[in-house]
Image (cartoon, rainbow, N blue to C red):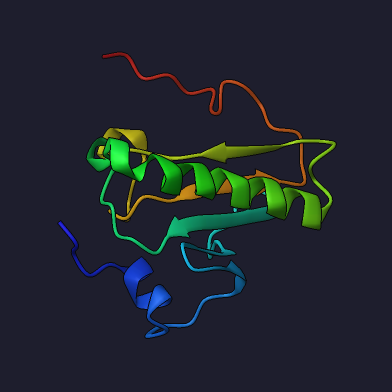
Amino acid sequence: MSQDTIFSKIINREIPADIIYEDEQALAFKDINPQAPFHVLIIPKQPIATINDITPQDAPLIGHLYVVAATLAKQQGFSEKGYRVVMNCNEDGGQTVYHIHLHMLAGKQMGWPPYQEHKKQ
């Protein structure tokens, strides 16, 4: 299950990234294709391919990713006005790198639904 991904290469410093946070369990870096004025990816250092692969034993790690998001929101000044945190799962969910990651977006008003184009099944 632990395939070599672009994220594992960032964790191992094999490729560069604009890292803004790191601890023993997680890493956060700026998205190279930002969808908001502030768009970072928060990843666990432990490789987990998709949400479907999360086990009950991973619950503390997944919770930690959200603690990192809240910490970054406070540090960056977004905690009061708000921000969005999203985790995509598989192709139809928009996942392109198979190493779970939170997208943290802030710095603008977020719409709902996230996109207006609805495809008929």
